[in-house]
Image 1 (cartoon, helix red, strand yellow):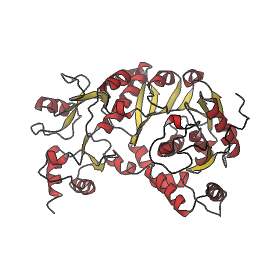
Image 2 (cartoon, one colour):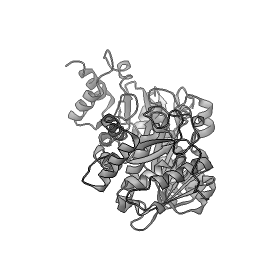
Image 3 (spheres, helix red, strand yellow):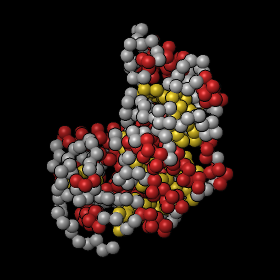
Image 4 (tube, one colour):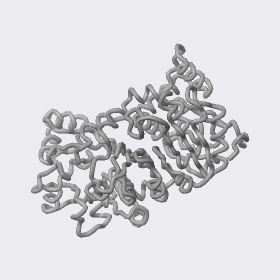
Length: 459
């Protein structure tokens, strides 16, 4: 496709995300600070400012995968941005990763919209990566489900407007031997169980829309990815799962293996609300219930795949869903604020070429010191709580603070930070969950958790 023409409306507005400049159409909501998601129909080129944290984590995870040799030890890495829209994501890969990593990438960015690709091409010409070769990125117009059959992809990003399910099968069939697939879903109402019929239709699942709906959404999406991989004799290892405002994002390492793929149901199961004694005992014996204490009433419990609830309704049970860890300890520890700021935040250091380029970018967008600090905080928020979460990621006990007063003899929600600290002092794994609602993830038994929560009010 020839993309040498200047698009209508160019240059529009100039915006800076991470350390990468972007021209966007002069439409409402573009080129400005905004927390909420954008409406797709509101602009000729779909650039969602609210997905900035998503793209920042993508830069960091791709860099970590290259650093650790998860994709291949040496040589070129074929990456596909399957629904690229403004193509800011792959441009950030090239511009913000260390040059020795960026130079190993061979990136294909595809979109069906010719206007989006015209803006993408103009941006790539106007704002070339500082150190990496711009030839590392190739733009293609078409349907990603067809282009992906060129095969051999080591990195695939699926970020549609809505559900990613229509793209999964084609992607799984065409991966390299070892690959990372990042999957976003913006149809969170379906994944959280707000519309039960849609949840069943799109994800073949039921979801209880309760305080853990965001956790359920991540687990249902992971289950769909895992089952799709198994159909193609592959298995997944979750690297990172995030519920971020209006979207769910899961990143998985995909490897071949018939035997392991056949065991996919080992990590799949159900979550029942208000489980009875027998269900809690079954959860404990399956290693899925760190809370233990089968004789004490509890809010919910995981059941293994081969012990489904008698009645799968959106009021009583969620599933099938992923019952294993939602992320890798190694990834959570590596995606920290220090690395995020080093790679993805403007430095404005006049003593280095990179710093001078950052300073020039800040001037280009007309930012003042307050804007620079806002951007820095945005980068830090994208990885907030991840490193701390690593200390309890292997635990399956999770509850929100708003729920605890119903079960413990307390008058209101305890301080989540104080509760975590006290549980750790007693020798238990505990961390603040990155869910939007204040929640705790811990391996502490249920009676210990209740006693400790009550103790938070006594001192």
